[in-house]
Length: 450
Image (cartoon, rainbow, N blue to C red; front, side, top):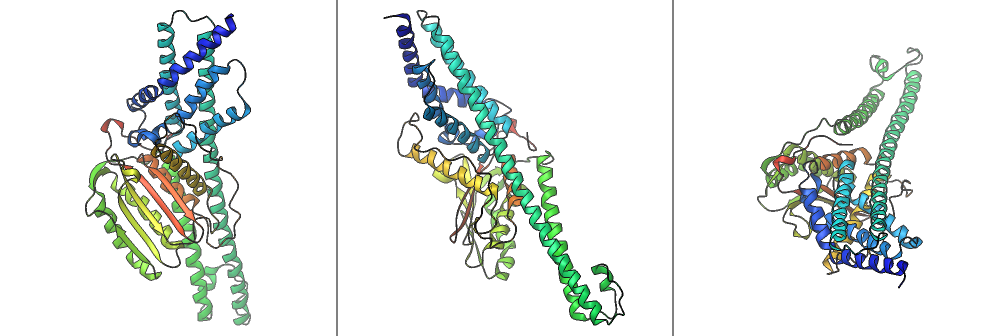
């Protein structure tokens, strides 16, 4: 056996060793992350969601040792990139900040480096080319993983910003339409006043005219109210989002009965539901004692409920709370489900599309684990990357929910909560938010991180 063949054989043995140690490596990685005082979002995730696509990436790392230094197949290279990008998508959905994603990759790098160093020490007969090859493969794995995960994060931020721009443009279009209607009203008023009013410049000056017909005065007032309400709502949302992005919101965790908080909120919104001819039902355990930030949980829930009531024409909205999906003992779940047209029946929202893709990816990960597959099993199908293109289906709603949904997402990040979205046109939309039941005092955090 020549030196090249012997090197290949030793690399294959190293790859097999890493494969048998994969569960230990993943456990070491999770412990390192949980012991990092700067990382908080991972603490409440179940094992399968924490591991996410990392087992597939470890398997790809092992396979690369069999072929090094020959290039991997194009399909294998693309699959590894997709897995890394999907990992970034999942971490965004689960409430991570970009800094936390890169820190996680750093801890994984250190765990693998420790494993390689230990193997090298226990196998002094290794040829000189073996370990440098393994180190190069590790560097490629981690550099590519960080690059793809962070690129996906930036892409999602860009997608989210695109939704904000579109929302604001639609609001401005509404205001411009109202201004054109006002101009038409002034023209009619000038005609009805038979020239007694000169050139009417704005709504306010028109309203003070004593001879203005009452029906036109009423329409002026309605247009003013609609315009001011629309602009005020948009500015409030922009200011709330700016405060969250600037880090001016802090997490204040206290023990609370979240069942009472949610039931009271639903009761307060019953008049709005009745006014729209809809039902609003609240269902969940009588008492649910957890740790959390009550005002922020209320803001998240109220935002989701108001949007659901706003766009639901028939039927109603269900507010639910209780154990999280898959009965994860470390998290509780908030659910808002409506019978509306679906999030994409109207102008849609890029951030909603991203959340829907992330939810599908998360369910795939859970289903794979639930079917008893090993953590090393490859993903059945890589999810496509989030498309930056807007939804082109016919518009049947008012402006999209980009800014409002971004506020929900930012508040969830602050509370280490993950958001899931499922929606079908004509069937309704379901939002699920998974909150930690408890927080470690040493890991309190405030504001949005870069």
